Length: 163
Length: 257
Image (cartoon, rainbow over the protein chains, first blue to last red):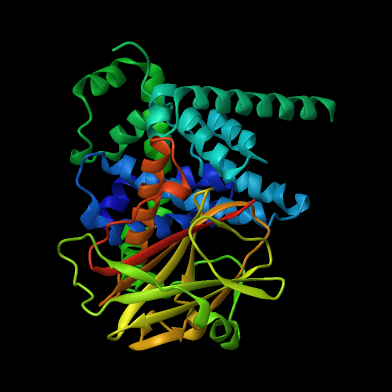
């Protein structure tokens, strides 16, 4: 377990930060991910890489957490906490910080399934074909959902420019 | 190779895990590419800082300790539910048809010789009925359950909705573990009050002689839903799930338009 964590702990942590936008919640999530991985270790047959396996567990866990938040939203004031944003910025690391923070910003206000799609597309850089396979939907559906994501991003930009 | 490394490729490279089987050409590219090399160094540096702050030894100990606790006793937030009065089930038992739990399809499973059964009841506007596959329910409706077991066994009752969210209904920490005594038409000590979410939901009642790992069950349910969706189906067409250690299972779905 310590070895797996040494190899992939930070990767999982950073992914959870992008999903949750909160380094403290992400640290808890990392532990949950490895607990799930340990319990399901006998199911891991090495068909995917350990990173892919752990990232899938992290995705499922974070989407579950986001669904709970989605149904019990926190106030706008606390969700735009400046300290939290700074901590998030520090947590994603130096490489690609700007692009990861842009993705994180884009995810604000999105439903959990769209968040997962955005992470797979923008963070994992999966193609539309790979997304369709991963999410079990048609490529046409993926195209439509990515279009909606783009419109969401444009809407956010318009709002920011207006303010 | 054509472009720069993707983020996952870079992460695999920095992870330095022999199991990750990083293609040699990626290493060659990074050695020759300033941009990728700068990203690699930055990622390595961030990873090192993280490991100092969260040492693997402490982390592994905490994970192993937590993993030793059965998943079923860990708190998993769920849909609004409450314990219903026993009279709710007793009123309808005479009119209800039993849903017999089918023996598990898993060839290694322990068979339930005498059979196990579960009855699901829905109460709407004070009127109660036995719930059947595909029936419509409404927000605020209350569900109750009665079971028959010929020997002490464990029951896990889960629901999955069409958003893919899984909710455990039984066991509930407040009323004890998953173990149930043998008995005929005993009321499950938990009821469910349905919330305002719309859509389809499928319940899985899983009986076993030992405690099954809830996370393995959840994974099986997620996979079953994904398979259905890949074939154009959904909650209504999901099949039984295969989980090691199950003696019997029953599944039923309902609609909340």
